[in-house]
Length: 168
Image (cartoon, rainbow, N blue to C red; front, side):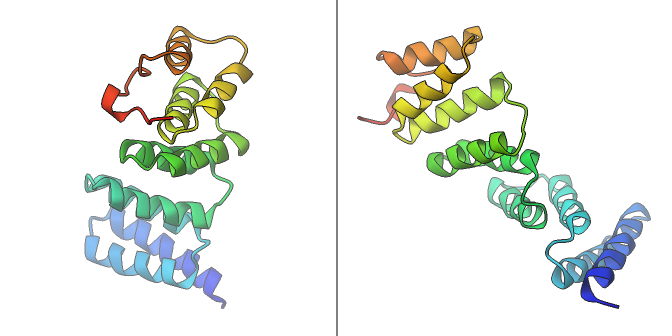
Protein backbone atom coordinates (compact mmCIF):
# COMPACT_ATOMS: atom_id res chain seq x y z
CA UNK A 1 0.00 0.00 0.00
CA UNK A 2 1.11 3.56 -0.64
CA UNK A 3 1.59 6.36 1.85
CA UNK A 4 -1.68 8.05 0.83
CA UNK A 5 -3.72 4.97 1.72
CA UNK A 6 -1.74 4.41 4.93
CA UNK A 7 -2.35 8.05 5.83
CA UNK A 8 -6.10 7.67 5.35
CA UNK A 9 -6.15 4.51 7.43
CA UNK A 10 -4.14 6.20 10.19
CA UNK A 11 -6.53 9.17 10.20
CA UNK A 12 -9.53 6.83 10.54
CA UNK A 13 -7.84 5.09 13.47
CA UNK A 14 -7.03 8.49 15.00
CA UNK A 15 -10.70 9.50 14.71
CA UNK A 16 -11.78 6.23 16.36
CA UNK A 17 -9.24 6.76 19.16
CA UNK A 18 -10.60 10.28 19.70
CA UNK A 19 -14.15 8.97 19.94
CA UNK A 20 -13.09 6.40 22.54
CA UNK A 21 -11.21 9.02 24.56
CA UNK A 22 -7.73 7.60 23.91
CA UNK A 23 -5.91 10.89 23.34
CA UNK A 24 -2.45 9.31 23.30
CA UNK A 25 -3.37 6.87 20.54
CA UNK A 26 -5.21 9.58 18.64
CA UNK A 27 -2.12 11.80 18.75
CA UNK A 28 0.18 9.02 17.55
CA UNK A 29 -2.07 7.98 14.68
CA UNK A 30 -2.80 11.57 13.66
CA UNK A 31 0.91 12.40 13.61
CA UNK A 32 1.52 9.33 11.43
CA UNK A 33 -1.33 10.27 9.08
CA UNK A 34 -0.03 13.80 8.54
CA UNK A 35 3.59 12.68 8.19
CA UNK A 36 2.64 10.17 5.49
CA UNK A 37 0.51 12.53 3.41
CA UNK A 38 0.18 16.28 3.95
CA UNK A 39 -2.67 16.35 1.41
CA UNK A 40 -4.89 14.20 3.65
CA UNK A 41 -7.66 16.71 4.32
CA UNK A 42 -9.36 14.36 6.76
CA UNK A 43 -6.24 14.29 8.96
CA UNK A 44 -5.70 18.04 8.61
CA UNK A 45 -9.28 18.75 9.68
CA UNK A 46 -8.96 16.34 12.60
CA UNK A 47 -5.79 18.18 13.67
CA UNK A 48 -7.63 21.50 13.42
CA UNK A 49 -10.51 20.14 15.54
CA UNK A 50 -8.00 18.92 18.12
CA UNK A 51 -6.34 22.32 18.25
CA UNK A 52 -9.69 24.10 18.64
CA UNK A 53 -10.67 21.74 21.47
CA UNK A 54 -7.66 23.00 23.42
CA UNK A 55 -8.54 26.72 23.20
CA UNK A 56 -5.38 27.63 21.27
CA UNK A 57 -3.37 30.77 20.96
CA UNK A 58 -3.97 32.41 17.55
CA UNK A 59 -0.54 31.31 16.28
CA UNK A 60 -1.29 27.65 17.06
CA UNK A 61 -4.68 27.85 15.37
CA UNK A 62 -3.03 29.49 12.34
CA UNK A 63 -0.51 26.64 12.10
CA UNK A 64 -3.34 24.10 12.10
CA UNK A 65 -5.17 26.12 9.44
CA UNK A 66 -2.04 26.14 7.29
CA UNK A 67 -2.17 22.32 7.39
CA UNK A 68 -5.81 22.45 6.24
CA UNK A 69 -4.91 24.88 3.44
CA UNK A 70 -1.99 22.70 2.33
CA UNK A 71 -4.27 19.66 2.25
CA UNK A 72 -7.08 21.51 0.46
CA UNK A 73 -5.82 24.74 -1.15
CA UNK A 74 -9.23 25.53 -2.62
CA UNK A 75 -11.06 25.56 0.75
CA UNK A 76 -12.46 29.10 1.08
CA UNK A 77 -13.53 28.67 4.72
CA UNK A 78 -9.98 27.91 5.89
CA UNK A 79 -8.68 30.93 3.96
CA UNK A 80 -11.34 33.16 5.51
CA UNK A 81 -10.61 31.92 9.04
CA UNK A 82 -6.86 32.43 8.68
CA UNK A 83 -7.55 35.91 7.28
CA UNK A 84 -9.64 36.71 10.36
CA UNK A 85 -6.81 35.50 12.60
CA UNK A 86 -4.25 37.58 10.70
CA UNK A 87 -6.46 40.67 10.93
CA UNK A 88 -6.82 40.14 14.67
CA UNK A 89 -3.05 39.80 15.05
CA UNK A 90 -2.27 42.94 13.04
CA UNK A 91 -0.87 41.15 9.98
CA UNK A 92 -2.96 43.26 7.65
CA UNK A 93 -1.30 42.58 4.27
CA UNK A 94 -1.58 38.81 4.73
CA UNK A 95 -5.14 39.16 5.99
CA UNK A 96 -6.11 41.13 2.87
CA UNK A 97 -4.47 38.49 0.63
CA UNK A 98 -6.31 35.66 2.37
CA UNK A 99 -9.67 37.48 2.24
CA UNK A 100 -9.10 37.97 -1.50
CA UNK A 101 -8.24 34.28 -1.90
CA UNK A 102 -11.33 33.23 0.07
CA UNK A 103 -13.57 35.39 -2.10
CA UNK A 104 -11.92 34.13 -5.30
CA UNK A 105 -12.43 30.54 -4.15
CA UNK A 106 -16.13 31.08 -3.59
CA UNK A 107 -16.52 32.22 0.01
CA UNK A 108 -19.83 33.93 0.59
CA UNK A 109 -19.04 37.62 0.31
CA UNK A 110 -21.27 38.69 3.16
CA UNK A 111 -21.06 41.92 5.13
CA UNK A 112 -18.63 40.44 7.65
CA UNK A 113 -16.15 39.18 5.05
CA UNK A 114 -16.27 42.38 3.01
CA UNK A 115 -16.04 44.59 6.10
CA UNK A 116 -13.06 42.67 7.47
CA UNK A 117 -11.43 42.60 4.04
CA UNK A 118 -11.88 46.38 3.65
CA UNK A 119 -10.51 46.94 7.18
CA UNK A 120 -7.46 44.82 6.45
CA UNK A 121 -6.80 46.72 3.23
CA UNK A 122 -7.20 50.08 4.99
CA UNK A 123 -4.94 49.08 7.87
CA UNK A 124 -2.35 47.80 5.40
CA UNK A 125 -2.25 51.30 3.94
CA UNK A 126 -4.31 50.37 0.88
CA UNK A 127 -7.24 52.77 1.29
CA UNK A 128 -7.87 53.12 -2.47
CA UNK A 129 -8.19 49.35 -2.81
CA UNK A 130 -10.52 49.23 0.19
CA UNK A 131 -12.72 51.91 -1.37
CA UNK A 132 -12.64 50.11 -4.72
CA UNK A 133 -13.73 46.88 -2.99
CA UNK A 134 -16.63 48.63 -1.30
CA UNK A 135 -17.53 50.45 -4.52
CA UNK A 136 -17.65 47.18 -6.44
CA UNK A 137 -20.52 45.96 -4.26
CA UNK A 138 -22.96 48.60 -5.47
CA UNK A 139 -25.42 48.53 -2.58
CA UNK A 140 -23.86 48.80 0.89
CA UNK A 141 -25.24 47.93 4.30
CA UNK A 142 -25.13 50.57 7.02
CA UNK A 143 -21.92 49.09 8.49
CA UNK A 144 -20.18 49.03 5.12
CA UNK A 145 -21.38 52.59 4.40
CA UNK A 146 -19.80 53.64 7.72
CA UNK A 147 -16.52 52.03 6.70
CA UNK A 148 -16.63 53.71 3.30
CA UNK A 149 -17.42 57.10 4.87
CA UNK A 150 -14.57 56.70 7.32
CA UNK A 151 -12.13 55.78 4.54
CA UNK A 152 -13.09 58.89 2.61
CA UNK A 153 -12.78 61.16 5.66
CA UNK A 154 -10.86 61.47 8.89
CA UNK A 155 -12.94 59.14 11.02
CA UNK A 156 -11.50 55.62 11.48
CA UNK A 157 -13.73 52.74 10.36
CA UNK A 158 -15.72 50.88 13.02
CA UNK A 159 -13.45 48.52 14.93
CA UNK A 160 -10.31 50.56 14.24
CA UNK A 161 -8.91 52.81 16.91
CA UNK A 162 -7.66 56.21 15.70
CA UNK A 163 -4.04 55.38 16.60
CA UNK A 164 -4.20 52.24 14.43
CA UNK A 165 -5.11 54.08 11.26
CA UNK A 166 -2.17 54.00 8.85
CA UNK A 167 -0.70 57.22 7.63
CA UNK A 168 -0.84 58.03 3.96
